[in-house]
Length: 531
Image (cartoon, rainbow, N blue to C red; front, side, top):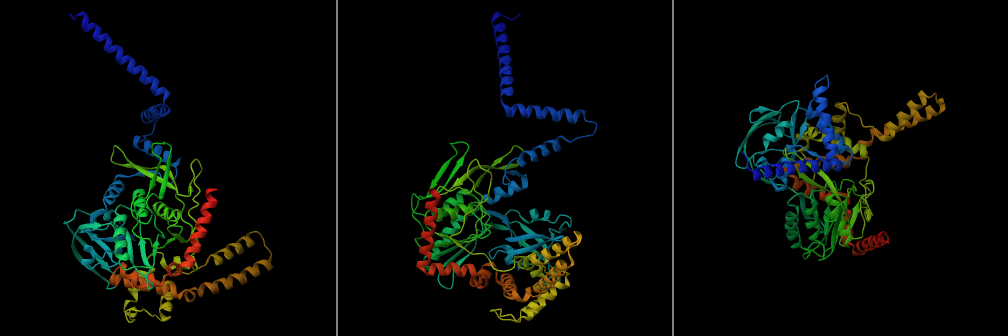
């Protein structure tokens, strides 16, 4: 028979359990998040148990999660396990592979670029090659990207590929040994004709600052007149890399960037803390594709009066995301703060809707040309196919690639043979206007005038290949040099000497009066912003 002490302990235990359950219930009822989760879970249980048609619990929660993220900005989303694994792998600054960039093309995988220091280059792979099989397994025609995972693997392991090379119309079996491929953050760096240090930064992923510092040391030893930092189409990357990269150019205690979060414990300001790697003037090239960490870098240098911006307004993503791992090995990427610069400017001020205003350049420069025509030339794989089809003819010309207009005639015929016709925005607009006039019984006189404009616009479209012959020749030269000698050679021999925005930046660095006047204008704008 239990003694009095055991009975007291038993009653006390029951009382404690009752109190825990009681106060847990009160907490559950009082906490909106827990109460909502409990009610949603109960609703899901009723649906899966009682609804006459079978409903998957997984589908219910997947739809609910998508609805949850739809309430947020477009930069907050769920990362599936494979994407999360890739992100973790790349955050280490390297991956096991063969050093190629590939994209799906029809039912196969096409090699877009080959790293000069990778196993793919050693094995003789070229941009434009089509991967037919991986480890003896054909690339799945309905989902070729499935084979991308199989191409990566531990360094030192072998990989068997079969590629098809259109230029020779034959397949080639390759056996390669994977290696640790360091992520390539600097597409190219070198000196321009007038001794400006040109650096093309592709992203701000893990390891960028180390690569940038090494490039700066090499370029500084050659005493450049200044630096051209190319951030065009740079999608950004890690906040820490943007801060560390900016620190290479700023004076000690200069504000790089500040971030504001809902919690004051997460709000921080980051200052330069080292001796700058250079005191030379800097021009940063930007466009609408310069975003996120690229904007932090550019805004930090301009805010500290260490650089001028040339180009177009940046994307305007004034947000910082944090990645949180989940119990099932997936993750979520969530916006957690907004950032500001030394002049107190936010790209997206707190408590306001996203507006994507971006950083305005100190000197506006926009690429010349008919955008629709340039997109026609560069869209898809037309250039690759043209070079493959006319390789023998193109090889006749020496390294200066002084192509005659015969090349343009061949290219135009090549496009037309594929049933593609260039139509400008004006031609499309006139066509729509004529259709609207006919549907609404417009006057014959108006329609006749529009048809005359239509005919003139179509003639102008046919002449686009002649107007932009230099652009087409440039793209052909770029691709041939990249295939022959690699991407760095294409930048050195074709891109850097030919791009007008690089020439403009070079002229600004050469003329200190122009550079100083742009810097003064930037400072005046900042003072107005602060007021």
